[in-house]
Image (cartoon, rainbow over all chains, first blue to last red):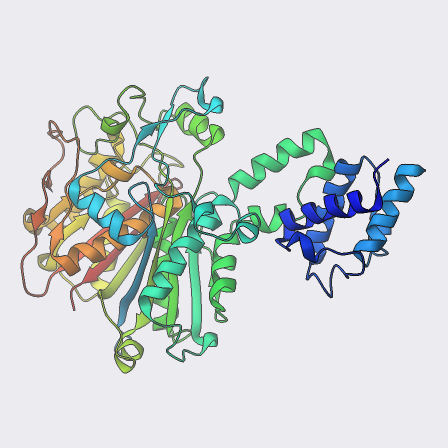
Length: 82
Length: 411
């Protein structure tokens, strides 16, 4: 099972690929929209890439709850353990 | 009512001969071919395996994150628009962006996006990009150019197949003459070198099949021509009212004197063999520009290298200009860059403007034996154009019977 840091690091690479945000900026306390300037369509791309990377399902209804990087990492951890 | 005079104050291009205007123009003057045999895996079972891809990949120029949000066609449009905009010096001119319009055409639109997302859909609907629609829509190039420059007058996308680029210039000219804008960023782009268009144009018998000799495949007016060569790229011209350009001390390349549009009303794919639609487009461009056939010394022909189309255009030019066509040098850039579809008229308008400004017609290559039915003064070497006030025509015709002729003159 991937550690929190491993998930954050992989997620940071996805955010960098899609939105061009430097990987070191993608930290658990950062808001996707307010801090990282990831727009809503890019967020959809991030979610789909994360689903494939971590082999989880992230329902569309859940995406609005993933405000910070930490929210997303926690969701992925739960989904992998569930 | 006197017409508002409109001039060209900036040029941009990315073509099979180069990633900018200078390299493209040098390539045209040198008679260089941008054609090559494709080596991609997807081309292996196609009948036509040659094309003229751009010399500089747009993704080498556009920032990575931005590039992935643009279809290839829009990438090419943005590259050319950036160059034309910088060339015009308008950014720091204090131009009211509500007086800045855009008219950027495409013949097909975001075909790369359409096809790649269709492939993704077959694997998993969730793999379809949330950006697929804004990337594939035909107005995507015009929209992204307007976003790039902050243009807030009208943003337009004429779609008339291979006449689209010229129609965009026609439309932009009208916007300024109607007082709706002071400056219009006008042109066209196409990035459609893919299996589907090569197969589809191939099935129409529209493409040259000279797979073993790509640089000799596009041969407008030559007796052995067998179809066009698919190219890609973009051309952008900055159209500006003469008053506006003069007031800011702008560099002026040429005057955009007039533009003429007509329809064949004949067939969806074949040109009217009498050339009457093309003739009317040229006549309208001349009359709107207050020009006569005697003023025309350079003709950038549509001349795609198809057996019927080249003859119909030659007839049309003779009907429009009569005996005065004797002193007009005919040139066919498609012999070097191939057919850029929605980008063709725009890139060739850039070439026409430069021919007037530099007073030289680029050569047409591969005319080993001129077809007897071509009654034009075809230059197979560079040809010097005369001093004094002279004008030029640029023709583009498209499937659907669209004809668009643009008249430029020296200033």
